[in-house]
Image 1: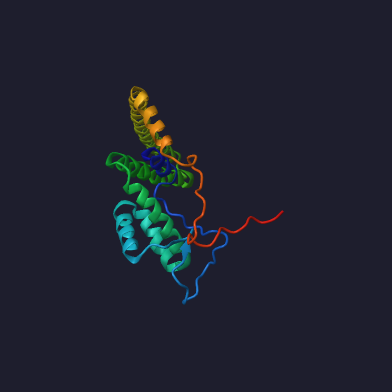
Image 2: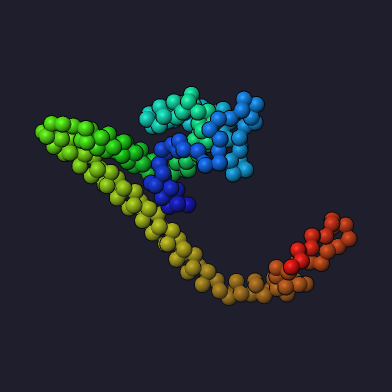
Length: 213
């Protein structure tokens, strides 16, 4: 599970989505009920405050973007808040060392972006070279952090493989007992495994007939 979460966080981070789905209206009526996405309700006020507090402390740039969006487009703000809350829940499930690596990687990405913009706008050649040196160092830090995350993923995969091997060995050692248990189970059944038992009176209405071709 952690492997999947790390992959998710590496590709998305907690960076906020500010573009709504194509079918979502730009504004919402004042009487609109709390919107739902994918059959799930949007975040509660308590969850919203928790996420905003975390963003203010750990992702200041995302916090500024989200609070600005709240004032400019409340409907899109709710959509972005819901998505960000889901990512935040994934983040909290990660081990502390991976959270720290992701935090550092996010900071390096922001720094690299700002340095790239500064390099483009710089007019003085000496200044451009200085910024270029800083940018290369920042990108190098990003690379090293990603390598660290990949190594942690590999360690987790190795641990999972070892557990599976141990389970296979234990199962092989219990072959005779497992086979005999399967035999006892089959002998007690009155119909093949997985077969739906016949309906009894009082079981409720019969299932609908399949559509005719």
